[in-house]
Image 1 (cartoon, rainbow, N blue to C red):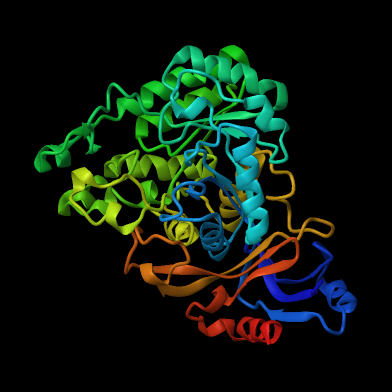
Image 2 (image 1 turned 30 degrees about the horizontal axis):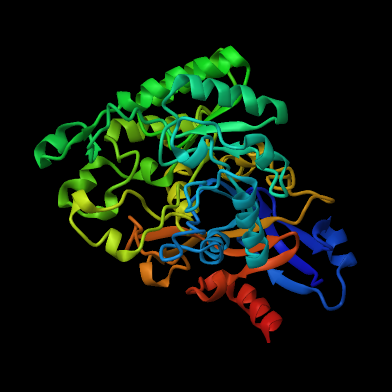
Length: 451
């Protein structure tokens, strides 16, 4: 297996050091890394680059099986690797639904065959995502895929009795229920956030309380049964308040925010561009501010991309007919870093980026070999980022099979330059994307390895 000697990287943005990756692990650091490196080790000049533990996504839609026209496990996980990820949790709303051991094992094996990142299938909470009968939770947990996260994402587990039973069931194997918080009765026919903009546009409104009521119910249920609940794609200020309240009382609740809910508001819908149609909807500027503050103070634990690819025909149509969802794996790190590293919302540095993108999601999903410290003996799941590189999002140049990014033609700062999965390079210099000036040596290493 190829050894990599990474020269001058800054772990978590701290002091620069050298890292030797060998036999799937971080073998040495500093001067010892140079002395132990084999003569044929690939040397990467990482001066100015930040080293992070490989990113972990709590919320990815890979669409396979069933919607390979939108995404495949291979294309989606390549996009994840280019975005800096070494592990993703693949949601269950495939066709057939991932509600049996057979389907989750199929997704897991497709991930292993693709080899870009580790794929951890999410099992459905209920049979067919229909919300009435629990799926084979125990069987999926005991399968080769070792499922620990269960969700009907795309739909809410709205029946409180079913939700209670699911929370009780997963306790036996330390699982977690990841809830899509959306009261179905309060959102029938809804198209966007209920507020001034929806009134101006004449689109059916999606009230914030439809999310907040479910979260309030579920944290109380989790407290009652002593189980874990994870709240997907938190989008309102009231939701942040409820999660903060629950955590203060010791309830085992975690929460995620998406890059698009941290950066965009419902004002984006004024042009009726379906790229901005998403579930939950983009909210107000006040909600965005609350999410940013919640991420900074630890109320929100993770960044979940909710990467939701769709074929062009599902988005290139009128707003009402368009599918909900946005892609996000390749843009997430840059979007969030631009917002949160300014210090405007409280102290937030690269160590915090590592926490919300890697350490916390790995802990929530019980992915024990990811989100680890950058230290000798730890698995070599590593991402190198150029924090100064500027690049423009070109939908046709992204690895995902779909083009429904809300950040099309936007210039972002911060570029993933290299990714290592157990010491194997999955990305070097963005696998052919435009190179930044300080990445010449990374590019040379990539050319040397592939020649």
